Amino acid sequence: MTISVVIADDQAMVRAGFAALLAAQDDIEVLGQAANGEEAVRISRQTRPDVVLMDIRMPVRDGLAATRLLLEPSPAVAHHPRVLMLTTFDVDDYVYDALRAGASGFLLKDAPPADLVSAVRVIASGEALLAPTVTRRLIEQFAQTPRSNRSSSPGALRLGELTEREREVLTLVARGKSNSEIAGDLFIAEQTAKTHVSKILGKLQVRDRVQAVVAAYDAGFVTPVSD
Image 1 (cartoon, helix red, strand yellow):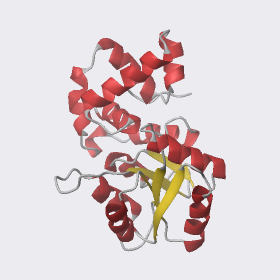
Image 2 (cartoon, helix red, strand yellow):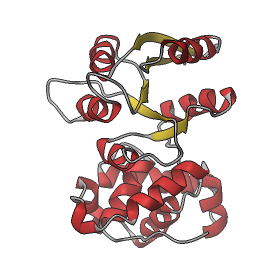
Image 3 (cartoon, one colour):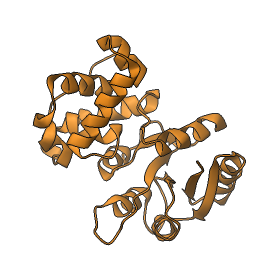
Image 4 (cartoon, helix red, strand yellow):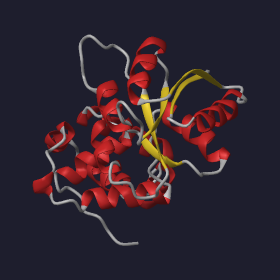
């Protein structure tokens, strides 16, 4: 299956580099490029990509505002892409809000080319980038924001619908564990762990693992731990 991508970055050289790298992959097709957030929204709605690479800091409309607009529930919009946020810094003030806006993961712009290709495939498959150190740290720092300063996500209100086993699995997901790691910790098959994660996403009515983690932290169901 071919993965379709739109690239949004205000630097032409960066866009061109990402586009060349991704277009060289047999399973990835670049549908368009945008120089700002407003263009990113327009082009994404026209082309309906699977994944949008979204720079956080752009003119006209920044990546955060564009992500909110692209992913907000609307009966008039049938297609919502998955968004992979691109950032220059491993800690960006905007990233915490990007989690709430619905981003499925984060990647540093100076990451190795193979990481970008892998990230696009991971995001397109419905997973989320929780394993990389940068994302794990961002989620933990997001979670340390006083709850009085954040509004509850919709998924946080549905945690009571989870079974005891699903709550155990969600706790491990929130620690950045992969399906194979969850299986090892709980002494279950990896496919069983994957099934549990899928059921959790369905019950919480969230897009992917990142949003499930946001819901868990929002509700105080899990708290950050030190490695």
